Image (cartoon, rainbow, N blue to C red):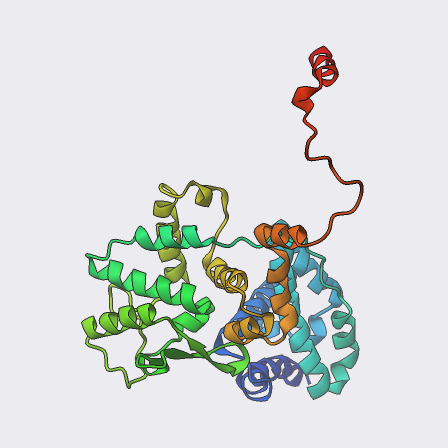
Length: 339
């Protein structure tokens, strides 16, 4: 019976990753890899805590208190924030929800683990680049070099489309339509496809870049490659952006005060679309959000837009006499001098 128990955990994990997540849930490979990393960390934690071999680990040896201990370990030992903790817990919840449905004999364990709550996280202001800052980043790229031309095409495409980094990594030559109407097919979260328009300037730069790479526009070939001819990774794109943000900060001082990352490019696209008068529903479709509620955050984040909105509203309170000036009142000046 002990061998059967040991097999249940392995079988459940195999079906969870090979059948349930990709086929029944339709999750992207990127999400599945994140779930894999979370469960792998959890199982390694259990093996070390119990001082057993992987073959000795069974579902019966898993307790809700150990899940809580694992979450504390993430924060205190690995230095993860509450956001990362919640991502790991979400993966565990998903697995034990699947386990409860597939193996009812473990329903009690699964229900107890599913009651472990997510930790509240503080809401931070979303950082993004203003139009002048975007231009400074693009101008900092040396386009006389092959890598520079690639980086310019990459960042211009990202600022134009607001595509997620993984969507850029997955982009293929056949997804581009570089004749009018210029557009790109983007495959996003949950295998959802959307068509995003691109500027003629972006289409021209991409066309020149692909011709330089001698790439067939009709084939499913990765577009953005590293110096080894391999597709750029998410980390590679992050490195490229960081490099040019650092260079651009020398000519655009405001960039020095911002904490920016690849997803900030997506935020920048959204805000600049909003400033240009594009409605939220269109931006939702543009970015591939599942709901307009996700896009609403951009309507509350731009101070300039808030100031313009305030200026259109009739102010409350007593009207200020425009003819009054404190400089013309010697009593006020005398009182200020006495402070």
